[in-house]
Image 1 (cartoon, rainbow, N blue to C red):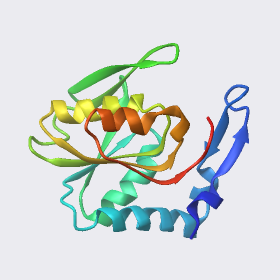
Image 2: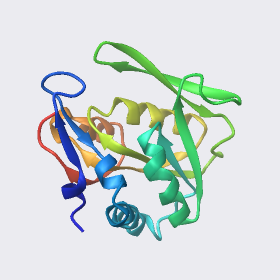
Image 3: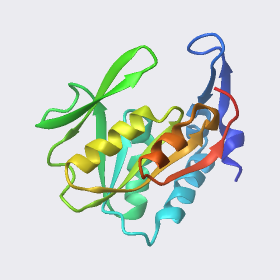
Length: 175
């Protein structure tokens, strides 16, 4: 099933000049949603993955069913202040300012192999911050997996320059 054909593009959202790649149209179609999870599961089946970590919020939607398909646990990586237990965090740069993501300190064990998942990779800043959190607890990142890649924004390059493997089911040109 061509997953890309189930992703809607919304021009000028959230600001003029941006072509927003909306996965809600993929998610509402049970066959397309299942095909997305099945395709990702097929890629990682047989690879040693101990946990799937999903980046808030759409990474939860893709990561949780993928974790079930792989028979492993799911770990949420959230915006600051959203996790109730003891956390570690990492600040990262945005176009204008900074943001922070956090991880429960006991969510991932030392030496575990973690698959990082999100819906889309653009500039790669959030994914790189998530990788740093995973590595800070003594785990390793098996791969960074995405449904969509926007190659023009350089996220793959950033992650690969920092030693991470990257996979995306489809690509869209532009921003």
